[in-house]
Length: 235
Image 1 (spheres, rainbow, N blue to C red):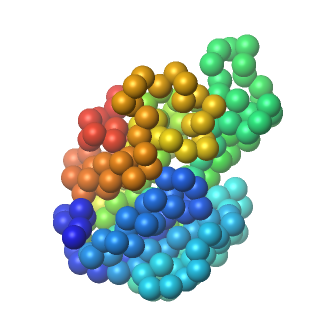
Image 2: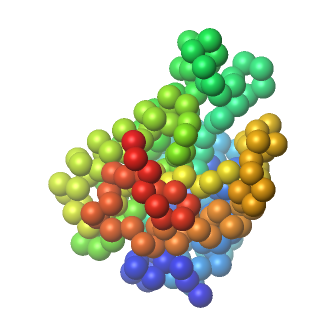
Image 3: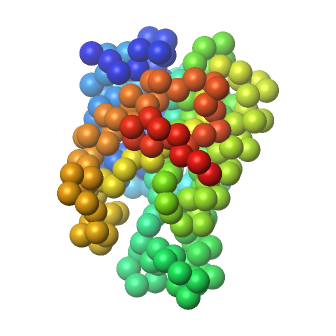
């Protein structure tokens, strides 16, 4: 079975942030998809052994040399059909917390979060977008948010800008943000008590929905951010 029927067969896929809760579930479901030939599972601390479809590799999205090395290794196997950036940070102990008000803004924490959530995906796009497959559908997707910090707002505008430049050479390609919903992972654990009943998703449910959204994407939606149910998010 496959949920990626709008793509050509034998997809070459990259998942960045493959050791995280959502990233690892993307790897699992893509490994099970009959249309996928390779899943490059990249993380700062790789959590997989290379076997079958899965090709394990290292990437540090805060280090441009690491990003470029990962892109070179991945593209040795051919052009890319789907790149998913599933890395990100919401909190980091007492030093890094979500910005809920002006008084919560801390310059050092803010810069650290922007580096991971916005600059990192931009550098990944810089290295990987030129290697997307031409002449057919390809997708570059990064996990974003409906209501989030300044770093996610920055990411959304970066994706919009990237989509305009990318479309000039890759008119069939899509650059998009994906909101996974509130997912039961370590990232969201400190904030789950505020989630309404029935709105806390398993990683399996969230990833299944996002893959369906990816399959439905077309160039007309490039530059946009979409929720897990396919609805567009204004930004």
